[in-house]
Length: 567
Image (cartoon, rainbow, N blue to C red):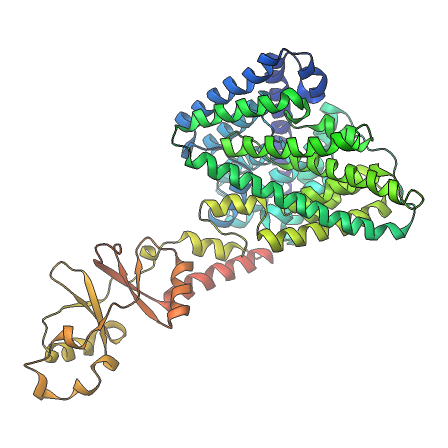
């Protein structure tokens, strides 16, 4: 695995480099220069170009996604998480490369999205391709996928430790030693390649920081609360924008075009919102914005990113969430410095803490964001402050929202991975894949004597009463038969319909196993009839609680064995 980790780490890192250079190439072609210094570039352009580029770009991107992308959507970190939970780390090469192209083009035309998510997906795609070609086991394939993710993150931030823990924390979901070693190797390889191409420079230029007093920690805790509120507002804004876009009755590529137009209009007043926004984040870290500007940029970035994501542009939210965190942290720091100047470390320290807290809460990756800040500053005392704010922001956001950006994306598609691999598998497995076809249907007119005979051989001692169309009308067990079990005087006057339990609980064949298990727990039923759908009520099988629990326990056992490195 070490050799494979080295190869995969190198491939993911080169992919990250190529992605970054592609973005620069597109921005140079559309805006005349890279948007790494977006303020100067955008301000020197005529207003029509600032609006037209993302508008026309949005149309072209939307057309590409609509006609050429599998599922007619982009891809990101959430899809990597889904592949680990449900498909043993398998990712379509076509979809992965297409998603990278869509994301590079989106950032290239000024959409307010980040490049880290697409780079993570690209690294995972390349890893999955290698694993598929070599026919690796599930455990090996997932570990190799983690290698690609770690290398991609490390190459993006020049932060190998954060890359390793992002792969373990967000994507793989466990810290097994069997996965840890190769992922570390890949993270180191990614960092080396990134430094060869871009130099040994951190993602942000952070001024020297130090804590003035430990009495500041209550302020950092309060900042964590403010950052949680910011993260919640942002996540809610993205959800609202996505819902609005979904309800607009026009073809998707026109929605992307409209989203590009809106981002362009916002950029006329706030050019910093275009692209990844690293320049503005750097300026906030170095105290080059006034309080009013920080607040305005925060609001503008929330709106621009929510519109970009909701409209269907490709890209991530890592960079935007760091942008927002820097703005809210900088604003909080200015206020704190004015109130307690003798106890404040300066607003730049609060900017850095805010950067970590908002991004950690949005991404659901507190450990990774703490480590990113530590690698950016190498300041232990300030890292403790970041830990306080990140933990508070993450806990509050989790309690209020119940999900991170990535899990929200998956839940919109009906996928739940928060409970681990076994929960995701239960959500994705349909009842029809587990149900039994060995059941005994009887017509409603069957005599009570016939019912007695059928019950003797019926699986689980239950009969399913159907009408002439095969639609379920009731069920019969020995308990339902009760007093009539041995009373032969009623043989000629009572039939199956008379003794059946009418309108029993049923499951549709398309229902998920987690829904089936919940229904069984709520109703107390051990086995339930399965129908084609509730309109026809056509009986197609039945499912037993034991069958559902077998699938769940098998997935749980495999997940735990994988965590221990036994698979």
